[in-house]
Length: 137
Length: 107
Picture: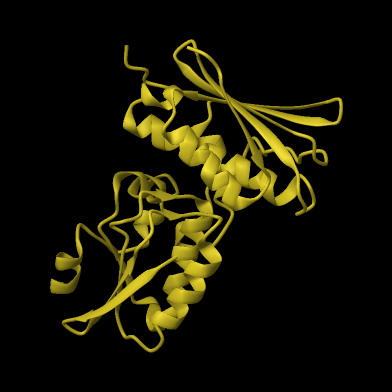
């Protein structure tokens, strides 16, 4: 199966349209429903982070690539923005009883992704996320 | 985010009429919802048309609850993907969630 690639502008509406495309694309088609939802959610979190921070709230582009690898779904996102802050390894979900309005993003990423790898090369942030998938044959 | 509003047995039912409650749409959602629920003693938010909710959308639903006196906002008709976000964040433990609006209004 080929790698699916999508360029998107770093703004929330472009992220929405990119996710709609991914949702209807071949890479996600073979995933179980729960896994598909998880992938779309974790992509939304990381892509909206890029939209918000990578270019200081200004304009910029990013590239999403997704593919299957060894029973998992791998997503790689590259942007040319400012150095990305590390996604904390120990991000835990806030206590729901406090009715938090934010702070869900990092814990959701850590909950859903089996692996999160961040690197920086040649002025680009490279984020690689792996989600364990139930890939139907 | 388009909202439709109706009264049913003394309950204000607010239905989100778009498929995505996400970072791109939360500001409009919060603004419209705040207007819609002004002074309502009890609100049921019908999310039956929403098939995608991200962390921003979740935050907006939490904010919406704070617009209602006494936090009397309940949810109805969560689609599987939306219910999953509430479950992963454990926010399903602090919201009253009904299978559908009918059950919400009857209660």
